[in-house]
Image: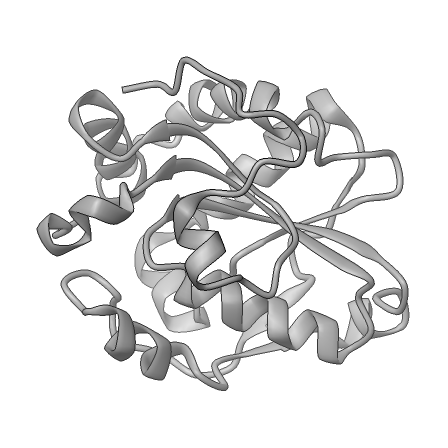
Length: 197
C-alpha cells in the first residue's frame, strides 16, 4: 500500500520520537504489506531485477528532498558470498536507477560488509542489532571522500532500522556530515511482530 500523504519536511514519526535514530531523515515509498511486500520478494529473492526500475521510480518522489547534486547514494552492501549466490545487490540496482533521475553520485562500493551475517528475516530488534554490529566498514575508495559528505543510504526495506543504524554509525565515524535513508518499503512499527520476510 503506497503512502498517500506527506507529513512535511520537519515531521518526526512516533517511533523516531521515542527512539531517535543516528541518521537524520528516512523516506519510504510504501508500507511493507500486500502488493509492495510481494514486489520486494520477487525483486530480492526471485531474480526479477527488471523490477528495479519500477521500485526506484516509486522512490523518486519521497527521495526528491533527500538527494542533491552533492549527495552520495550508497547502497546497503551484501557480503561477497551472498552477492555471489544472488548475483546482484538489489539495493545497488535501486541506487543506480535513483541516481539517473535525481542526480547525486551513486557510489555502489561506498560501504563494504566485512563479515557474513545471518539473514535478518525473523529476528527481533535486539537480535538484528547484534547480528550487524561491526559488520560494515567504509570502503578504502570512499574513505578519501567521506569527510563532510552527505550520504543517502539506499535499501529495499526498512524494518527495525538496525542495519541502517549500523551503516550510519560507521559512516559518521569516518567523517560523514549527514546520513539520510531512502527505501522502497517501510515495515509498520506496529506490525513488527508479524514481519517474516
